Image (cartoon, rainbow, N blue to C red; front, side, top):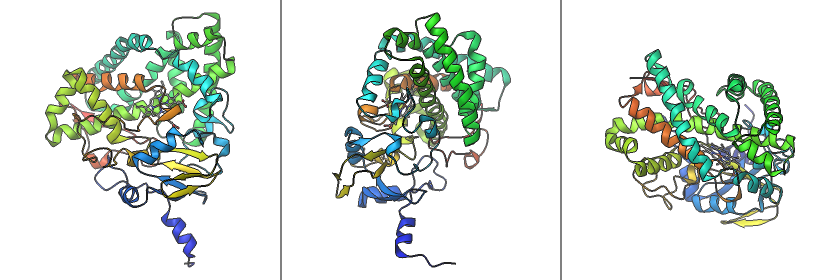
Length: 412
Ligand code: HEM
């Protein structure tokens, strides 16, 4: 073997740790706790060899997210993020509508228009529909009989149909929409499959925008069109972003959350699960705690410094890339007591699972409603829900930006 230089060895040691502890699928890689305690801003070597920074505690992650001198623009990044996932779809520079990859003031323009459409009223109207969707899928599970894959039978279709409701996809087009998006969001899709599917979903969204211009209704897309501020291309882009940002995230929270809840119940916390099913306030706390504890954006989020900035003990140079280890920030003992314990009764307020600052998740209220309804309906219907395979055999999404389970075989 070739002897490596000290510089190569240190670059190797500065890779992002990605291995979760054996037998503990919900805990982040253990090295992250050491980094957080000893060196919360430390060098990070990206897969392409580029050197940037890894931020691993709560306070400094929040500081970066709150400071727009740390840019979200993809074209400023000189490196691939740890695992790119769907990020190529956003474009370099960001394609029209992909405001998650824009900075103020471009970002602000979109965000203001979108916030005007994510109203409390619209979210309230969605609740009974989400309940209906959840119950229908549980009925189908009962009808087919055990076992079932909870991902395919429940966790994926819920966010898909909720996006249909939100955008106002006509009932007649839902099969096409679900077929197209299912390919795009197949939890094990290759980059090539993602590219092909994204073209067909893009075409679907463009058609949908034309249809809504011709026949406006009481939905988010029609509301955006009525502002008169966005082009068709921008509207299709926004719809695409909502689909991509809201789908895989919520699906994985539902499935991984169900796995964690089954485990938690069996470790002597049946009372906490029962409370989630019964009491609305308990359900709200439980959802926040699951968001904190699981922090499924497992490789964190990434920014690029626009100017030289001091962060903790380090000087970040203009043009350098930072990755924020959100799972580690959300297990920071300086912020949350006994952080590695799942406690559905605690207040997990201040967690960073939805990010922070100007890009903080636009769909967070909707995601919370989907989870509250999704977990409650599931465990009310199947209080004895259990895994149909040994826990070690559940296929985990180790290598995907968004953590979770590829499948969750369950029985009742
Ligand atoms: C942004 C997480 C559900 C739409 C974000 C960010 C995070 C996040 C961490 C910030 C990214 C950054 O700072 O770079 C999650 C999680 C979800 C979820 C964990 C589910 C549990 C949803 C849903 C929707 C949505 C349901 C829409 C229907 C968005 C959008 C942005 C975003 C549009 C970009 C906001 C901006 O740039 O201003 N999400 N999300 N998300 N999320 Fe979510």
